[in-house]
Length: 374
Image (tube, rainbow, N blue to C red; front, side, top):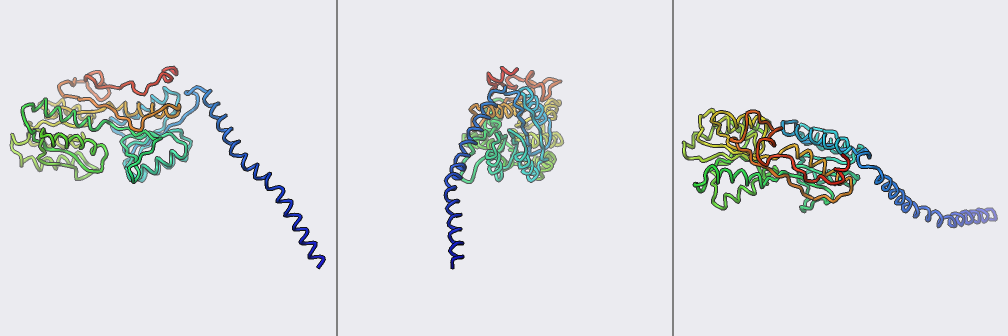
């Protein structure tokens, strides 16, 4: 009995010793977050004392597609702009494979990138991925990627950038209605479009339906691709199959929401000897420019954004975020009309700004502190 009592007393002594120590331990645990905050503030102050172009910022440009004429322009311009601001930029391509694209984004979130520029993500997965990047402390800008949850909410920290697709549609349709057919109402169109579900096409559609509602245009047929891996070839086949239904004088023009579709339609028109139907499109490439300059070409104009701007503005917006500047939730790139009669023999996507009025790179998002780095 005595032995048991001694054991109990010993246990009570040990328990009282731990109890006495507990408040001190709690105080240590409570002090840790405050200490961490102070260290973070001190690190931030030290970083602010280092010139922006000496901080070693790294950016990842992740594109859900393959290299084309215009996207090479965007990649090259983004690389040069990042270098100008003292940052490094790595480019990653998914080949248009959504699973590869998502894997790339997840990989870059886990690596030591300070900012990511995501291009052409799909709406069904982009919100969650961009939220994951933001939660990891990474600055994010997107291009042609809708960022919204099930309730339509965006991520405030993310800037979503687009071509001004509504304006692209307006300029192209204005050209058809007011320049090519000023005395015809409604202008009868074959419409090359695919959707819904492709964000830039859906935004272009918003303007198209306004022109329809106003009675300025009438849609005879909507034609889209049958093979996404061969858009140009499938549109050639589709347009060629419907042209016999429309004798000369029954179609005023073809409007194309995308230049790859326009190239297929152009080939169908030439093969059918249908020079009576003018073609107007959105987006541009060197191939488009060459076709627009062919003798008696029915391809009369296109509307496009200078794609160097796609790279430049994405990098500038990321730089502003890293610098602590205010950035918009949505940023639109303004387009220009490229009429075939303004093109010169040596015209390419690289020198159009020297040839076509109003087409070029603009100085938006170039801040005074950026100028001081030069």
